[in-house]
Length: 114
Image (cartoon, rainbow, N blue to C red; front, side, top):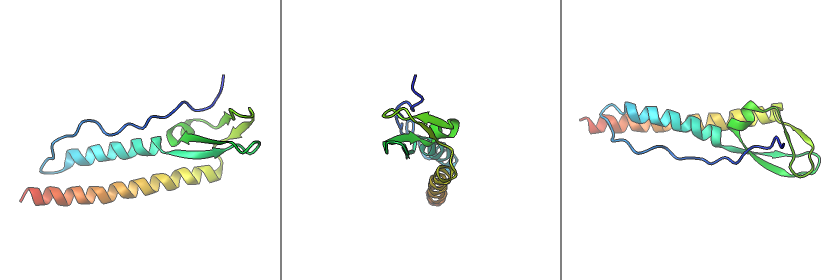
């Protein structure tokens, strides 16, 4: 049985909701969607034995410490400091985007409520 990740299918946000005067619902959906994006974001994991590149979702990488290369069956250590930093970097960038979008939603809600 292989330890390789199962394919990740990124799913978009659920059905659109009508905007509210406060924008609170939109902000809540944005928060959830960004966390899902972080979990679904794929990083390249390279086998040091055969140089095969494996695409693995951050959510999968968070719960696994090793995987087996499908090409050469070598064990790949996943939770290295370099990989952990890459996962944090992606999460920081997406959360910064969420903050910027939140500010835009709050401004738009203020304009709509006038």
